[in-house]
Image (cartoon, rainbow, N blue to C red; front, side, top):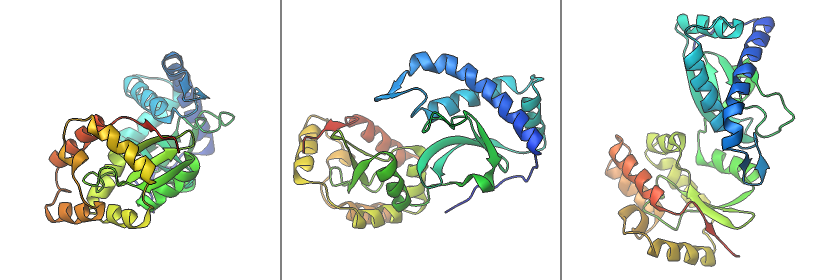
Amino acid sequence: MTQFNDTNSAWSAEKVDIVIKSLANLRLLADLDLVPRYPHFGDKTYPLGRCKEIRDAVFVLLQEKLPQSTDPGLVLIRDMLSKGTVLKKVWGSLRDEYFQNAMVLGDWYLDVSNDTVNPNKPRVEVLPLIESQFYNIASFEQFVKIARSYWNVEVYRNDICPALAPFLPMLYVREDGVSWLGEANDDMLAMTMANKFLAAERILSILPPPPKSLLQQWQIALKGITHNEFLHGQGEGETYCQQYRERQFYIGSEIRDRVVMAYLMLPRGIDYAQ
């Protein structure tokens, strides 16, 4: 698995506590805006499941407040930025137990949504990146392992839209019967394109096919969608991986954008009565 690395900048334990306090204050400001907008995530109460929304809101607040702030923790962050350290948003695996949206500042892991899986944990966690056990998602196998336990889903190969499978090779079914295709976030699309669809081809050879009844329900849903080559193309997903590799569909953003537009035509999920 790939570990993030950047500028090596040291903070003492005392400085880390100062940064945590400052980020916690920004988190409270973010919560004031987010709680009314996102009171629930399915049957879960805020902040559960809202790591992306929280991380994004705090990131925006940082951009607004860092230039002029006299807050001690924000001054420490600004000082590190002035030395060339980069602050960036990241998404990946935390301890290979769940997916997490966080920020990385040089060699530091900044998690301002640390309580979105377990609400009893502190809102904010700041750790040396090497100690955080935060990693890039490096393979679909790694992704599937986390998704099965974290989302409590069954994962099948995408036989629904095989022409889409080199980009989105997985079909999920949740405990309540809701089914959807994935994974369409920027990081996973970048991963499958970077290795020229070899990762998708490999996971398609490993995952089981969906039950026939599930396949039939998706086929009914597809009939109601305007014809699209990525949604209605027939064949085998692994064959499409090979064809797209030969046609260099992994280069540039034009094909990727068409894939995303096709994905957005699909229902966000269908109810599957087993």
